[in-house]
Image (cartoon, rainbow, N blue to C red; front, side, top):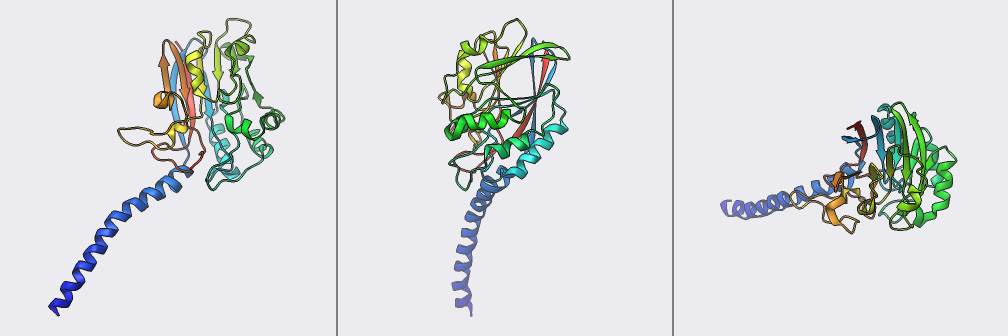
Length: 283
């Protein structure tokens, strides 16, 4: 009897050890590929600028059709944004998705029909991202404009806010288009503050001083961010430099959101999907 028990104990010991090793890995996998990508958080931030006080809802990289980001999730995004009562909603591109593991294409017209429910006194302003152009840029642009969204591709519009006039400006995608700051600023005809929007933050180093602050997306914050080392993969020639958050360089300012959807792999770790509510205060 004793010998039999001795033979059983090592087997159970090995099983417990194997479980102890595999359980954390399984939990981490579940969190990274299911729990965190399906979340939605409201990230609040603030910055000063020379323009009037402004509450901006910033969205990017919706990638509708990626796992965990279908039309139902988009409706949730719209509801959460409207509940914040922003002055303006700005969307930094990549409405559609292509090539993400487990994803499926959702037509841009369906996406636009949901986004038309966004409410803000100064409207909804958008630019297109690289995924939109890789799919069918003119079609995505047309679908959005047909619902009243102001899509600005190297273009600018003057609006009258409660605190005075300001410009909303949109710079085209840095990867797939010309992304001409000169063409954009040729549309700015006076000295009112300029709030610019683009998809790819790699355009930031060339941003002219005439632009007061730039909003961007594209990076997803790397999607996976480890303690100490940060995000090992960021789709930027500057690495982690412009991965997320408020960046200030040489007197210029940019805010980069980590976005809502996923690209390539449907994974997020320590970079949850976000809606940014950016409060701009007069300096």
